[in-house]
Image 1 (cartoon, rainbow, N blue to C red):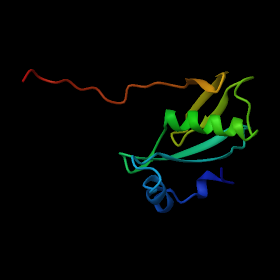
Image 2 (cartoon, rainbow, N blue to C red; image 1 turned 90 degrees about the vertical axis):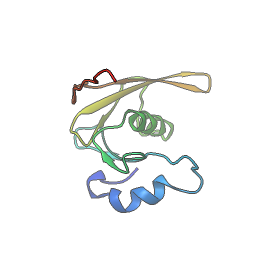
Image 3 (cartoon, one colour; image 1 turned 45 degrees about the vertical axis):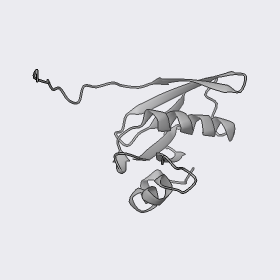
Length: 120
């Protein structure tokens, strides 16, 4: 949680956090801050991409869980709204089943690439 994701240094802080020694497989790193519309803004440094991505569903779900645990949001009553770097909003609703979180993610889907493979 940060005061403003727009001023966060993803390029500088992302790589060492993504490769932290306590995370042998590495991890995505997310920055979240309150947004002007009453929701949340999120930016993600994604492992494998090794840079910022426009949206990350797993990061949005993780952020919603933590915001709920920290008492900053309530995903049970309504979805936690997270505006991604693409400008699109991901909504995360959460239910609990004992100690398990049961997330539901909604957002816009788009075809961004089409291709075909020839027979080899």
